[in-house]
Length: 233
Image (cartoon, rainbow, N blue to C red; front, side, top):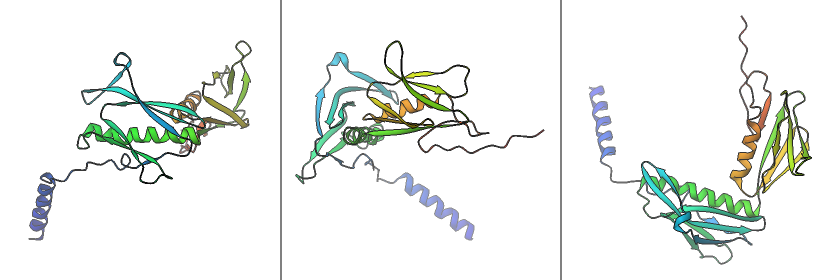
C-alpha cells in the first residue's frame, strides 16, 4: 500500500512539472548591474553592414551589428554584440552610476544563454581598463625557468623557455601585455584584456603541460594536478 501511494505521488509531481506555466526568464548573472567606476566612459557604435561578423548557434544565425567601446585609465577595449542585446543606464544614484545588460526576449533560450556571457565580457572589460587582469605562470621541474630578453634581430621582447627540451622555445610577447619575472620560475602576465591575458598564459603552458607522475611542467594560476602512482611490474 505504501509503495502504491509513493508511486502515485511521484507520478503526480512529474505531471505537475510538465504542465508548469512558470519559466525561468532571468539570467542570474546577466541581470546584475555593472558599476561604472570613476574615469570610465563607454559608447555604443553601429558597425557597417559589410564589416559585421556573424555567428551560428542552434542552427540560427546572429549578426554582430554594434560594438561597445569602454575606455578608462588603462586603455580602451571593444566588444561586438548581437542585435538582441540591449544596454541601458541606471542613474538612480548620481554618485554610483551603472549600466544594465538585457535581452529583447528573455524567454528565448539562445538569448538567455548568451545574456550572462555578454554581461561578463563587458564587466571584465571595465575591470580591465580600471584595475587590469593578471595571470601567474609557474615552472615546476629541475632547471625549468623562463628568461625575458630581446630578440637580437627585431629588438622585440621575447620569452625564452628552459623546460628540458632539445631546443629553446622563444615566444613573442603580444602587444598590449606586460610580462615580468619576479624569479626565474615565475612569470606574471598583465593586461587590460582578460581573454588575451589568459590565452597567452595557456599558450605558454602548451609547451610543457603538467605531467601526472612527477608533477613537472608549466602551471597557470592556482592549477593543481593529482599525482598518479607508477605501476610496478
